[in-house]
Image (spheres, rainbow over the protein chains, first blue to last red):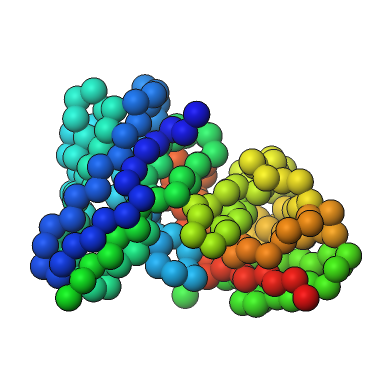
Length: 109
Length: 113
């Protein structure tokens, strides 16, 4: 049973805000939510991690509702260089991470 | 300049041959991981190690072997038992355990001749 479900792909335009929602209905108390970004032929890169409510850094924001059964990665004012695959992971400390298929985001000019 | 390196960038394997992929990190991380990525797919965990001289199988360990003799190094051997080895292989490390941020190397693309 997959731990997370996210859209296969999303299109956007430069300057827009992109929101990717990840469903994790079976999230456990000890699980954290982590997002990675991957460009073609490169290793994934950590974007953001959170447990509840809202987390913001210089790259993105992560919104987690009170029930923690979903989370939304928000990328403000995307550019062409934000075209990549975005992975949502849910895992507790000590458990191995599981990367699903991710969401392919295409930013158009 | 700290980081995680993988070599070679491209590797060719002949039928029945074992090949070894190198992964080195100078981040002083305890944990290291190997993933396999097939075209258009996500990453799948092959092996991981949370401490020197100890490692655990991931989801697709069959046909692969690893060693962790030094903290900095975690080589992966693709054996002849792995019948479909063509893929992009990624090595990663984290400070302590899987909940810590994982830092990935540039990857090795393995092709079968």
